[in-house]
Length: 197
Image (cartoon, rainbow, N blue to C red; front, top):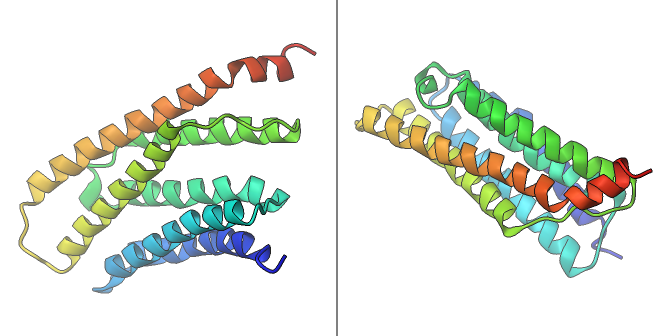
């Protein structure tokens, strides 16, 4: 099928855009943060379209099964870890948030990989889609905040930092909840696969 290569190409592109995003995020030149936002949005769009194309043309490959969710998590976690290292965001993005988000993503990725290895598909939910949407929105808002600062635009910085902090708290809680949700709804399958041998 002539479209078969497109989803894997988009997934690979998303992975390759991660270091580009980080380069612009930590760059000192005036348009760096703006370019970081553009790269992040472009990478997020590839996430939406590789799934749409794969479903539309019923395309599934081993590469896509393993690397598509991995690419998503790599992009999101690189953004959150990057934010945590920026001095201007020390009161906004906390270590405990990153630990919870990372723990959830590593756990879910590990369980999904093990289940796929056993030939079983993990049950997903709408809560997971909400989590992804919220993470992308949060990252974009933080990038906009960094852009405003980089251009020295007069903004109520303290108010914005507080708002972004609470947005991060909500994102962290929902992200962690979806991890619990995954384990809960896949518990019977996991029990049958790994406990009842």
